[in-house]
Amino acid sequence: MASKFFVVGVALLDLLAFILAIVAEQRRSKATVQQDPNNGDLYCSYDADVSTSYGIVALVFLLLSQAIIMVLSRCFCCGRPLPPGKHRAWSGICFIACWITFVIAEICLLAASVRNARHTKYFVQDGQLSCETLRKGVFAAAAAFIFFTAILSELHYLLYSKAKDNFPGSSQGHSIGMTSF
Image 1 (spheres, rainbow, N blue to C red):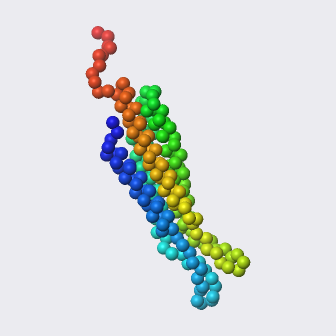
Image 2: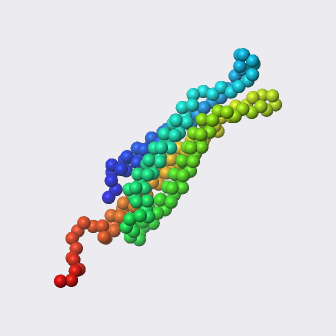
Image 3: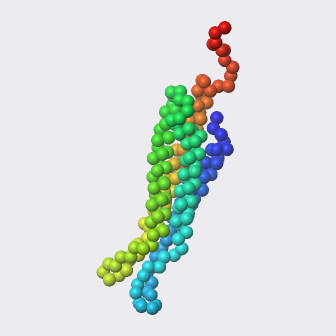
């Protein structure tokens, strides 16, 4: 049986990562063109860079929840083999899909956080200064993949637990010893 404590704990970590990614999208840096009062040169002025921190914390929470699920399910490949059946098959499918969505979410979070933290690109086009910022929707895409990862990792663990509990060798009942006298 799946441990309710770990299921709730992992769901909480995933929820926090999802919320932080949404907040990071709302608070991503914006730039305005300013004129230097001393020499009249134009430069880019960026507002507070709090979304980078939100993105990194979301990345860590998602990484932690994935690590907990993989330790609990023994990464699906270590330990005793599971008996063939629909629970093992669906657990395997969820395992693969959860890793794919996890990697995409982590890449989106890391790339968005790094890109949002860099404020050094200035472009002059047709005599006007253009300030480069993070494209809208990158943290939102990460949040979507965090959501998919949360669902798939929870399903993987629940199906893995169900398949493990249905394993005949894992019952706690007594058996007849087959030793020689």
